[in-house]
Length: 310
Length: 42
Image (cartoon, rainbow over all chains, first blue to last red; front, side, top):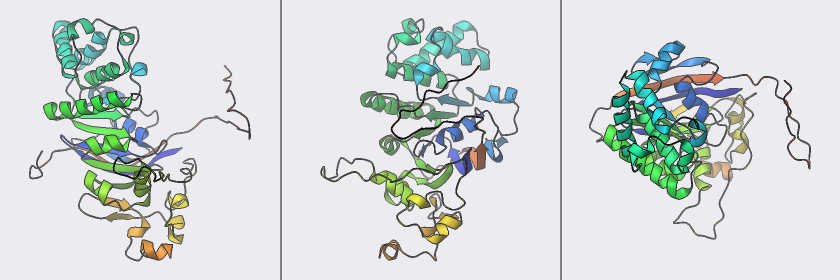
């Protein structure tokens, strides 16, 4: 299964990068590969953190990095928390391991972190178990756990998917608040474009293990060039739209990544597909310094969209 | 953060390829039937 096929991106201090795409496009595998949580190491390519190559690090070296330099939050907080250990113990574990603090110091620091993520009465809550917290509160615990060692990068893999919409909004606000206070860089993986619009500085749109389009949020939302980006944006309900207008889904399904197509992976579902799309993978076209797209329509020899429809 | 501030590069991913095997999993779904219960032999 070729889950990730030539993905490139960069992340700067204090910014939020959103990775979006439909289920099975390789978003989570990309994120897990950054922390080397995928059972098979990357086949090729490089991951450099502060100039250091991560793909060649040993498991022991990676363990020192996980939690301390990079924190991660997963989709479902209940399955990520240990149900038989108090939340306090789970949060301070990182501090005891990475900062060699005494238990008292680690407890004090953990209480401060619980306060930062908006958990009331943190001294009392430290002694409780995960089942004594609501879904939103559990996700706050996960955020506290991921940030307690003050990592430079927080990777959030669909952090709001398992939560109801009112709690989703609170969690997104919490991310923004924490980023303003700590300067942590966030990689957020989601298929919720509402979340992306609210929080992301830059967006990577992934499709079939590749990056279809990437750029600053404004460029991707307003100046997008890839038909897949257009498709996912059209499939989302809009507050300013006509309520009688039907949503336009992207027809078809993604290709099988056991045997991916040689050309553009989106050509079977694309309204503007040309012969070349089936045969040759589209090269990267730079639209501006931070916005690029992999689509043959951007090639200077390509006909215009109007010509393709006539 | 203002645009004029030079940003510190934290992470750079370049041409990353990740693949993994799906060992021995085989499922068949027939028209009109529910997804089959998968029995794992120990």
